[in-house]
Length: 197
Image (cartoon, rainbow, N blue to C red; front, top):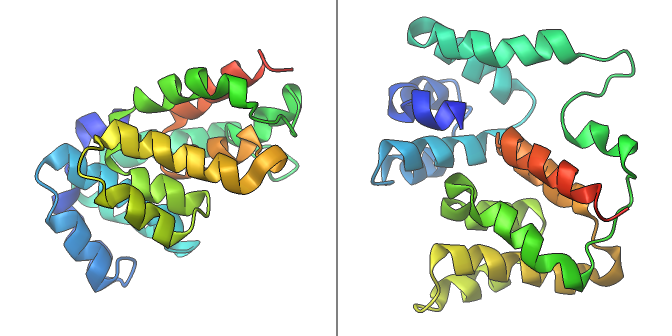
């Protein structure tokens, strides 16, 4: 949420585009969003898919006019780096069990956590792509005019659960949410997972 409240993505996308971190399509997808918050959410959903260089270039772009944000983002990296090379919320799954299934009976609490996050709701397709839901399924979900964005996210998670069956792991959702920069929601999911053990 910190980035959503403090960053205006339109001020850095030109630089990220010039450094080939953003493709022309990515750039346009961000520009056409109607609010600053949605532009930031779109940028944050795209960056994790743009390779290992993307985060450092993002920090460099921030450093020029948004150094207070760059400093905030660097702080967890500097303070939480562990000796085994893992960090972040998803790495803490070892505390509660890495292979926690998502039982069908637990979909409602899971969806409640995810739907509270406006960025995830706005970028529901990116959540689906991160979970490797087939593009045709995402298109079909989006075509239903009666679906609200919250319902589209819900249908996306259900499509993922159906495709994974008993192999659906909560860790996969946590990793996608974390990659999208939504660490608060990822933390909620980790806390929720402890109730399933």
